[in-house]
Image (cartoon, rainbow, N blue to C red):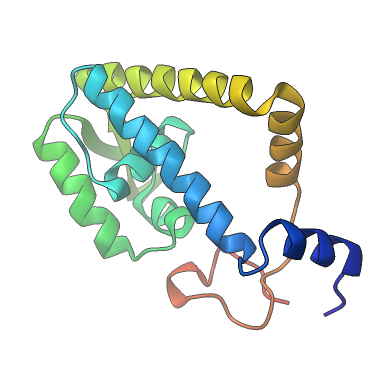
Length: 169
């Protein structure tokens, strides 16, 4: 793999011992913890990190368990355990998929809709604060980088839980 020496040298100067993944993980954790705080401020009980990821993906239109598992890189069984907890708490329900009788769709209950709207509002507020701290141009650049197709996974097969969702190079 060819590496652009200019970028590598800039990164080494900015963070000589770091790897990009550390910054990405730190940023994810910052956003996720801000989401958790926003949910608490909205009067909602804390959810696990996996449940928060499921809820955000549900709000983005991913409504089948198998699709959620692929999106999150976990097994369908792990997703179903979390869905069962969310159902028990009255946040989601399952209903037959009108396009595929073999599958179920996971949908928000009325209480779940209130909660996810509160969570989305918290995320929008968090993004606005981040934009004020880093600048709109930096946030625009971040969006462009994250929305860019990074190509296939480097170096072989992805984790088996994600094997059907990521192309391999």
